[in-house]
Image (spheres, rainbow, N blue to C red):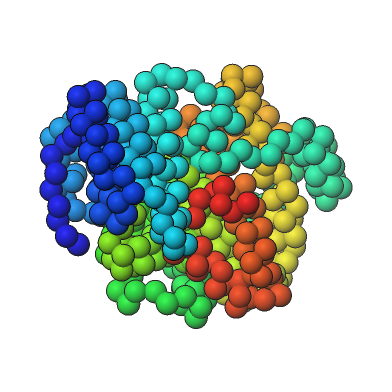
Length: 437
Ligand SMILES: [Zn+2]
């Protein structure tokens, strides 16, 4: 990649007036202007990361941009001014004709706008849950009343009759499906192997791609992919809470194949390396990119293991490895499918909590009741809300948007090859959440 060093220019109104005048001179200028704005965007993301430890999820671009951002230490006001300046510059660039180029142009606009919102939040501005998800993730998740979840809970009541809270009966049943700690790595490695094999059969990945797995504690999330660049990832699995058998395939697909690891590797291969689009070498977590990342990572589980294939694989490979009774695999996934219908209860809980309608204790109890989360898991989820707020919509609403988009393009379950093709295309392009609808 060409190294094009430019001093930090986001340092107050004078500099911004300068950059805007500079942009006006170049109005309509295509590729060069985009390359220059992309570079400044990377610098702004890295600068925001100095004020927000969770902001920069990955960076593998030129080291000199990072050094410039670190030594300039711009304030939040400097960054906000920079965002405005580059938004204006971007508006001065005539939208390109090619589809991918046009998506890139729109993507940079939305990513900058989200950065502006995150900077305002860091400065203390308070947004409602839906305002925040619109500003950061380019989407507002649907709302469901308690009666929606109650109907699902009523069906689960029939499945687990008895007295005491339903969550306790469900939890007691589920204990038979725990992966023993000493078998965790073997089961997880086998699941990664299964996800990778299925992905490689359909998607051309760079030859040297790979990832390593680490087991960690003390986190608000259950798994995390840290993309390192050069087609490598470090995947961390949180072992704070018991891990059930479904997490093996879920995490291996979501964090690895065809989820985050593949998404990042394809962006690096097709956009950063093949086209020199440097903005994709940085991944700001609180941005529209995250809805695409989480939505594809979750939908990717179904793409890799459609329909009954998952139960068959679990029954023959993972249940025996985990020392669980393979005869109960179908039963387990029938119940999981029912519980999955409560997924949006997590969004409702977060919405009420972020909007100040419920405190931590009340929202924990609400999650136990409506999302069927045992107390420890509900408490962990509230810690996740504290750290990531409206980010929660990216998982389930993201998955639903991705599914609808892929199916609208012919990637229905009965056309599995087409589904993989459309999925790969989405993973390799800078499409925005609003572009999925
Ligand atoms: Zn994820």
